[in-house]
Length: 211
View 1 (spheres, rainbow, N blue to C red):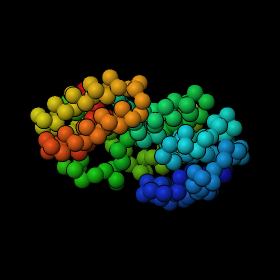
View 2: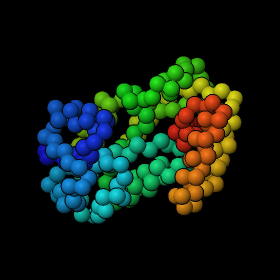
View 3: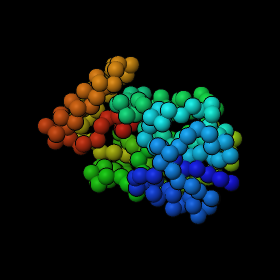
C-alpha cells in the first residue's frame, strides 16, 4: 500500500510520520508539492487548510483522509469555521475525516493545570498521538467515513470571571457565525484582550465544551 502524507511541518506531523512509517510505506510531501492526481495512493491530508491547496476532491484518490483539528462545538472562531467547512467538503465528496481535539503530548501547561477529576460543567476533549496514528490506520481499511476522537471528556476548572467570559463570547460567536471572517477575527481579538485584562486563562471559549 502506498500512502502519501501531505504536511511536513509541525511537531504533530513529525511524530505521526515516525509512527506511521513503522506500519506502512509512507511518503511525505508539502502542500506546495501536492497535486490531486494521486490515484494509486492513499492520501492523508494534514496541512493547515484544505482550501489553500486548491484541491479538486473529485480528482483525488478514493482513499483520502483529512485530519481536522476541529473541536466539536456549535460556535467557531475563523480558524474553526474554516476547518468545519473543509471537513464538510471532504465528507460531501465521499472522502474521510478524522476529528482531532487537544493532544495529550502537545497540550499547553496552562491547560494541564486546570484539568480536574471532579465533574464540572466545562470540559475539553483530549486524544494522544498514538490514538491518532491508530485511527488513521483503522480508517484506511475501514468503510467508515469519519472518526471523532472525543472520548472521554476531561473536566476543566474555570473561575467566575472565566465562566462569565465563556457565556458572553459563546453567545457572540454564535451571533457572528455567518458574518465575514474579519468580523469574527475582531471578536477573537476582543476576547484575547479581555482575557488579559481580567487575568483569565488564555483559552478561547471555542475550544471549551459545556454540558
